[in-house]
Image 1 (cartoon, rainbow, N blue to C red):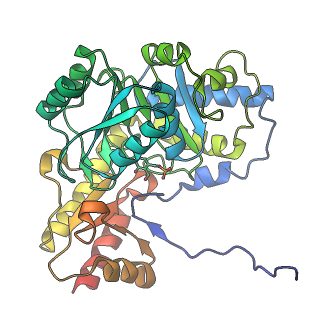
Image 2 (cartoon, protein in one colour):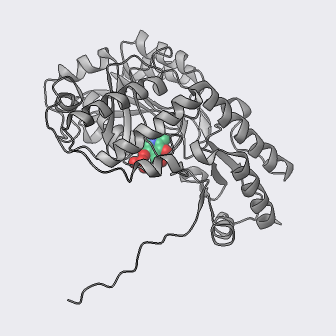
Length: 373
Ligand code: PLP
């Protein structure tokens, strides 16, 4: 076999305004060229402490068990679902978007039974429907998606949902992949037992180290399991030996991704989490005004508008693929189309982290306007 002749890496310049990843801040990119230390080096242990402290700040939690999971958002998602779900458990999951379905698939693989609380794609869950589903199925766990990337829908009333679950003695898992660091999220105050996220959305990191937090109640359930978690890699009872006091080897941490996450979280702390939520609302608000001026409408109602992911309804007769391709090829701007029930009906425009800046929104709105003319 001949030696492959592969040229030097030179991806095109893109403005990332899709459902993720978002543009990475230059400081985060620089942190990734920092020389490695060993993953058990005392200096790396300090870096792990920093990351945990910063993650607690961003999640608004005091949870001791707050770590980055090695892997993308699906890894922290599976860590949450697989560790909490014991064979025979019933888990109530949302039926209003793509990622509820993924949650259900993970529940089934963990040996649980997934039952759905139904809502149309693009609507949030109605607390009355959640209550009814609890009465009907008596689930052990309730999972919901705070920011549904597939539909651009924010789940309001989170404290109401978590209260329903707790009155029924269930634990709550929140998908915060597209909300963490961009949209108001208060893990402790809102009664969320487990929240998982990703780092390539509103934190603007390259994907690879995915935030996860569990309170003691959730961790007690994990540590009291009668059967081991089916995944060795994501077993939190083993991972805690690395991220807890012992700092014992479990697997080699993705050191460069941890550097990047630390720098991205430092940027959040410098900006201030509340200021960051306000910036996302302000900048995405300008995007909303821009598409409105073009005569286009957002798919979700105002009360559940998700600033980090704006679902814009396509005008009749316009093909989403044509618009998406034109933006990428002519303007170097990445956006995405709808999924599942909203396939062909919406454009998904991200406004996340370092991408959530006025100049980017201006570029996007004018490119979209020209493309739709
Ligand atoms: N949950 C939500 C809401 C997401 O948007 C995503 C990814 O887009 C995931 C989970 C899975 O994350 P990843 O693609 O990083 O594995």
